[in-house]
Amino acid sequence: MQKTVIAPSILSADFARLGEEVANILKSGADWIHFDVMDNHYVPNLTIGPMVCKALRDYGIEAPIDVHLMVEPVDRIIPDFAKAGATYISFHPEASKHVDRTIALIKEHGCKAGVVLNPATPVSVLEYIIDKVDLVLLMSVNPGFGGQSFIPSTLLKCQQVRELIDQTGRDIRLEIDGGVKVDNIKEIAACGVDTFVAGSAIFNAEDYQKTITEMKANAEKGYAQ
Ligand SMILES: O=C(CO)[C@@H](O)[C@H](O)COP(=O)(O)O
Image (cartoon, rainbow, N blue to C red; front, side, top):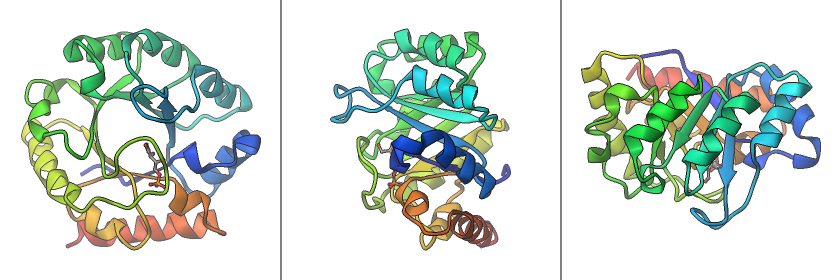
């Protein structure tokens, strides 16, 4: 297993003070920034695009930016995010006509490629692509909004994808997103997850550092199980 990564979702940040919020969260121990891109088409919400990603880089944010594209179509926005400073770019296979080509496009633009599975998307979608991706993101809520409850059936899926990843022998990150909290992260980590997106649990907390520290400690307890 790779090192634990906590990736706060800026969907729950105060957008009026985004640069400051992101700098604070990184100072508080966050490893990556999770950047949710919604188009009011693939999902029923509208958020931020490459200009905001570039603005964070211009503000001096150096940490990995983990872009989660909830957009359809996906391909035409990939070069813009790469230019804007994205580190990882992940997309939903349902939103791409040619999944293998989209993965190649992300890599050609110098980014790491991820695929995202919704709660009802079967693990079999990974069969012919697992060897090509750098990250698998499992949604534990239906995409579109922060603050939803963790869907428990995702735990079995985490175990299944962890097995697939281990069979490849490659360092592919297994990321979870949706309803992740201090009190359920141990159980999630025990299922093989190494990368945790959390929005409301971190940004609604009074003390970012305490929350991130507790999340990391509880994840470690989960690996030890
Ligand atoms: O992509 C999404 C929702 O579509 C997530 O990144 C949420 O923003 C996570 O928020 P919490 O469930 O942690 O509040």
